[in-house]
Amino acid sequence: MTAPTRAPRPYANPYLAGIGLGLVLLGTYAIMGYGIGASGAFAATAAAGVDAIAPAHAAGNAYYRAYTDAGNPLASWIVIEVVGIVIGALISALLAERWRRGVEKGPGVTTRTRLLLAFAGGSLMGFASRLARGCTSGLALTGGAVLSVGGWVFMLALFGAAYALAPLMKREWR
Image (cartoon, rainbow, N blue to C red; front, side):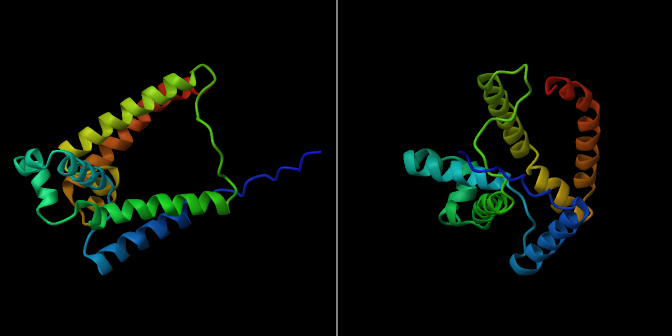
């Protein structure tokens, strides 16, 4: 006999979650002097990896030196923040009973295709975020909070593109 399964707890109220995110952003500025972001953590990790494998190459590259000259890139604020995000997300999923293994995909898409497209999209987003000198959280949240014109333009373009592509993407999930 199997144990009865319980329904997962409902998602957080989006308005309260938004207020909480705003308070986290305010707290990071007040305590650390930085906004929130994520792409810098991946760049710092890549710089640390290159420095460990090919230190001469890292020393000769201005992009990597921006991370390695300040000390261990893995000890930077942004890396610690992203590690905290992962740990916090795991704790939240466990407490809400929403932790499960699997690949979210539409019925007409194979798992392999979904993973390849997710990797390609994530790689493109990561590359673009480095070109833009920030990711969605850095540009939209932090930039928007400090009333950066670039942050607001990015946020409006992001939402516009999302609304334009939503009908196309919705078909893939049916």
